[in-house]
Length: 110
Image 1 (cartoon, helix red, strand yellow):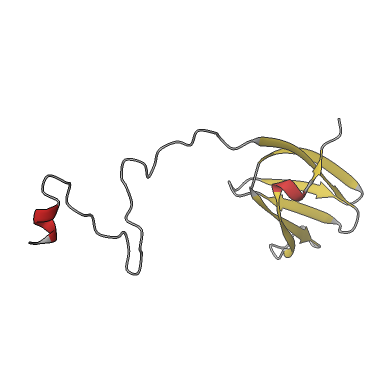
Image 2 (spheres, rainbow, N blue to C red):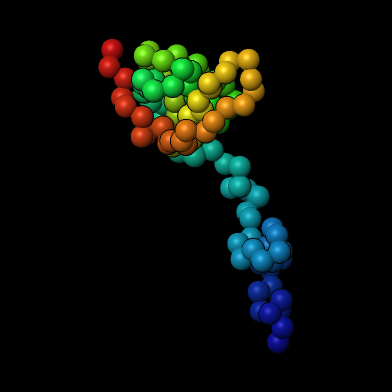
């Protein structure tokens, strides 16, 4: 008896989504919204060491923070932010200082 005959009436098996993949995607739940949207956090960053720091967020927006100043900003929980140092504002050559998760920034004090 074949396996197809053994599961008569069951939907046909789906192929894996890519080579080497052991998980078969389920189209009904693949793009389903989660029960809990990501939490928005209020964080801050103070620049005391570089002439200019640019925080680059996953969605593409940037925040400039000049030396000896700080900024308060909203960020999604779990988001990665690149901390870039700019030594020459006329140059497009920026130095990656670090990449931090949003939870690693100090909480904003209002």
